[in-house]
Length: 225
Image (cartoon, rainbow, N blue to C red; front, side, top):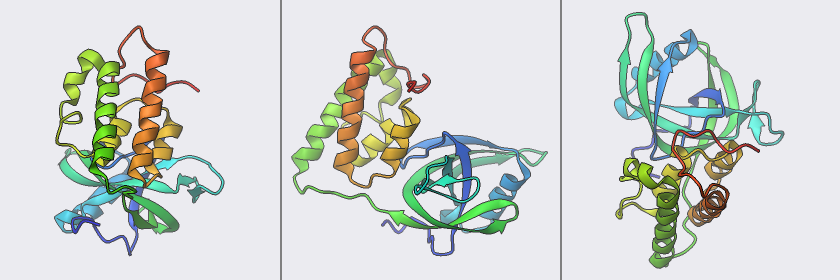
């Protein structure tokens, strides 16, 4: 893991929301107004800047795949606060940048009203030493995304840039596009980069077949089950 990742050995605060997934390499704007999460922000900002981090958890009841009460999905995206402002009434406006995947292993006692979990980092798994594999999958992902987004693709210039590696590319597409929530959870819990890319290609191909009349937009609602 990168030296920039914080130590999780003493637990990490978790902000759980229904339908929420934070992927590495993505940015999430948040409005913090509840007292317990204002406490979370205050406690987080007292730490060294590199440790201005907490995890976004997904509230979901999946036996064997969730923890605590109310239950939180075992895998969470950890983010670092990269921008914030505090309102006069104590609310926070902030931007959280996803920096890694973590597996939650157990819940600790509440701290100032907010939830804290023991956790461990989940490293990306590279299963091939052939750069051509990643390059080919990356080109296919970009082509499918452009075909779906069409005029919206201009907003994704960084995501679709030639320099981006396969892992970050897949994570950003999964984070920003309106994929079904259960697919996002599966992708968040999958360390294998090739598997994540292949699954995303398969879903994009199905979506292209389902919606040929109009382009997909990033703010569209997820596909209905």
